[in-house]
Amino acid sequence: MKLKLNLVVIFSAIMLFAGCNADAQIEGADKDQFNKYWYAGKAEITSYDLKQARYGEVHDGYAVTVFVTEPFSKSKQVKLDNPKINKNDVLNVLKLNYVKKFNTGIYRYSVMESIFTPVDLKNNPNTVKLSSSVQEWCGHVYTQLNLDEDKYDVEAFSYFESEGDEEFEIKREFLEDEVWNRIRINPSSLPTGKFKLIPSVLISRLTHRPLKVESVTATLSEVLEKKNIMRYKVIFSGSNRELSIDFAANFPYEIESWEEKYKSGFGPGAKVLSTTATKKERILSDYWNKHDIEDVHLRRKLGIE
Image (cartoon, rainbow, N blue to C red; front, top):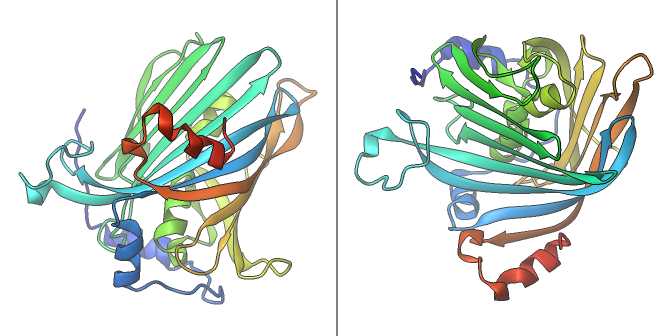
């Protein structure tokens, strides 16, 4: 796979940032504040109560978001084992590992996405990599997007005959899946108004829709009924979908809840349902060192036993 990063895409940056809502009351973070929080050697882990729409019903479960900064390889698009060896290959990214667990009748769904977004959005305005997987008792599917100049190279694997194994390209556009990282880095960078977007890879898989660019309209506004909370809302013109994310107006812009509305189920009887997630608990932890039996109490604290 040809992996090249277009590190300075002026036109793309102008298109993404020009539509930002100047009236949104967001308190910006200075460099020292940002570095103190995101480069302290810990990840931010948040658990959420999940109500997941699937098969025309809403199922209980939980979601977890894990945000952490990492040194990323520009050339290989993987986490660097030793970033000091080749400093010119280092790209600092904010990584989100996004996990969902929910049951559908007798069997369980396990969903995970990893999104790698450059911290320096001014010089690197596009997410460089995204991977998504879904496991359940029927089988599992996997999709990966790698930034390659003006496009994303896509590899997709599925146990369904109609989807099968695919390799294709999709024009570089803003990714729905990178919204979460942009909120945490700088919510003022979120595009608003009408623009083109690559929809969520996860939703594409769950609804069995081809992954292709869509037209959307987005707004960034204060939530009047909640103090110091902003809402980013995206309405999809072609797929009867909506996404709303509520987050703190002040740094570090913690994500408090979200709601997705889309048609759940298959056939003419499918109806639009809401998937919602509401914050349960949040901790900062070097979780990669917390793998012993004595560390299980952290799962209890997050409420995800």
